[in-house]
Image (cartoon, rainbow, N blue to C red; front, side, top):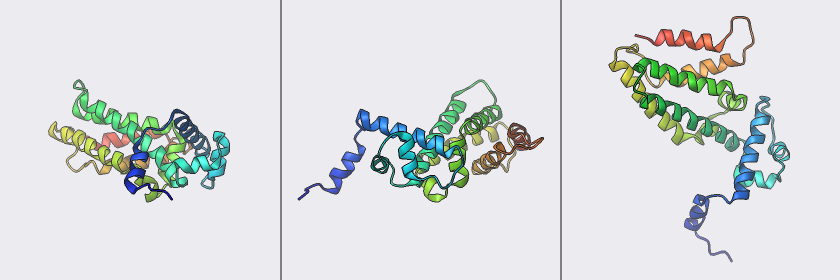
Length: 198
């Protein structure tokens, strides 16, 4: 009979993955990126396993379901978003609004280059985003500081708040995949930034 306690299990889950397990996890995530990039909502875990070259049980050992796998893509993207925001806060040369605009642009460029994460953003529900809860919380803290500085500098319209940034980013994400004459997400962003200025 097993004598493991819940504490034992928690400690095991916090231990670093072995090298082979880490490689399998990375292969699974890369396979999911390739499959989700086709914006196929019906992708199954066994397809991910086949593309990754592992057994489906290995996939489930790392990710409990498809939402968890999509959530990992979202979590990784928010990690990158936060790094861009931290860089904007650390850069003392541009003005406050310029730093904010540069961070937004860098984040949206990264999304434009990642069809799989766009799919997760646009089709994932609350369960997907729950996997990135701490990263999203950090994002809002960093964004609040960038917004505060831009307000203090008198460069950002008074009614623009950090809570508006996810809406702006989602709106531009919806433009990225539209292939119509005149529909250019970078122009969309430029117009939004113009409207944000004080």
